[in-house]
Image (cartoon, rainbow, N blue to C red; front, side, top):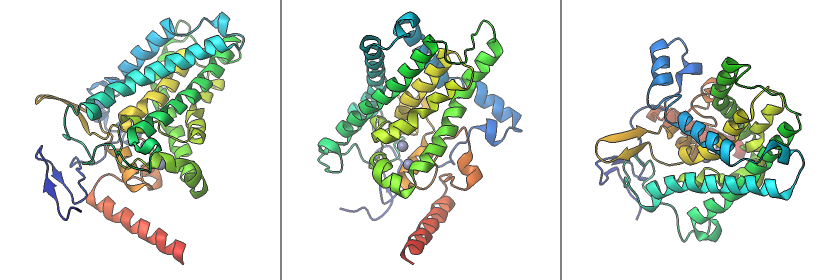
Length: 339
Ligand SMILES: [Zn+2]
Ligand SMILES: [Zn+2]
């Protein structure tokens, strides 16, 4: 039965007639490019928790460090193509994605560790739904995510082969430590800059209908929804890795770029505004911006650290005013199409 009015859920959260909960604050734009003159805000974001460095950046550094040291073939092996080392990379990436996405899925969805506390959409993942492969949203999302692993690994193998054959501009920590660190910090900005443009491209109607519709079947998102994309979208999405053909980098920069592109979507599609541990502790997750993209489609094409949406007028900041504005834009677009 359709809900007719706002309700209070089991956690005391107000949900609208569609069952949606909003965090009651605006979308957080990270200050470096959005308001660089706000020095205090900038410092708080750079060194605070959660912030630029903790916890996600530090966690990624741990994952790529271990993968580089223990689960990447020797350069001499990767100088020539062979099925052995390529499979090793594919398998390593499949295991990492399974563990990473698995932790978020088990926490939020399978065991519902925090119930619907801070969950934007009231519903759980869809079952018995022919929209999705196998009539099951999670199975569908898992299937397409492993297709993503093939593209992630394909790009990564190409880069490893090129590094092993000295075909890429190389920078080491020992010779250029400042550049090395700054480039590492710049990787998420490059990634999101790239994502904004390819995301706008696949919202072009012919590409949307052919490719991107698959990702947008997920209006109510979960951790596995992030990488649930059409293979053509994977091809575009992971092309951000090719930057290392031009920009002098270390393989660790390439790995960070590739790993964040692969693992980040589980976090950005968690569907929860905070990761809540018991009554006392919560980790702000700030995925409101991309959640609104899944809800409204033609808003928030980018992420919060590169405010291209704000500069080009597609930012939905989560306010009722933005709701009204983009509804109006939507209606005008429909009228123009019918005229
Ligand atoms: Zn998405
Ligand atoms: Zn989209």
